Image (cartoon, rainbow, N blue to C red):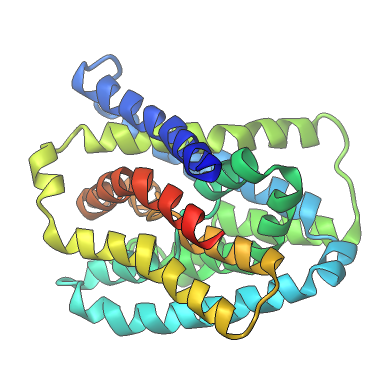
Length: 306
């Protein structure tokens, strides 16, 4: 029960920022075009800071060697998740531009700012470190191939522009700095860490703000989104919990594996399309439904499987 209430408290903490964004939109306390500004801040500054800060501080040769088993199992889980995502996407995406959103959502959970906050808040810094090492390959994939899936597919961006965006460049730079041990001079590390801490609350505020631009009934009535959300929140952690038991995976790896795949749908399905003025309806519906359900599913999953 302690794990249940700790997880519920962390989820509620993040959910409150989403409610704040919703109220800001409905009360018109900030301009309606603020979503474009907030999404660009996320895409150009805060998300690159989060990625850069994580990789340059964690992606060291020593850590990679010590936690190699975490990384190998992470890659294996990524392959399974990708295969299932490719298989399921055609049954849900009705338009070509929806393919990337559904493929991304089936494959990638909100492992970064939501996952980091939940794991740290419940289990502390030691488990957070294991979690960060386990999610390192997933983050590398998410911030390269995954992000490119969510960018416009209308010819306005070349493949190089998709792959060499600020988030991917931050990933490359972070890995390079981490492996080489090169340290940035003051005040850059402090500034990057501060920018990183802004990522989660601003993303949740942006999510709530965009949700506020749609009738709640319209977002909540998207029946197939419930299927996607429950797939992400219940089926995936159950699948990996069973596989972990089948191969007798060590408890340390099993815990972070289940944590990573129990998170709600990622907010990048809002943040990235919004930055390019693309349709955010599906992403807003996914964020609203999955985060509401996650208030219950995450505490339950953690209580049963951890």
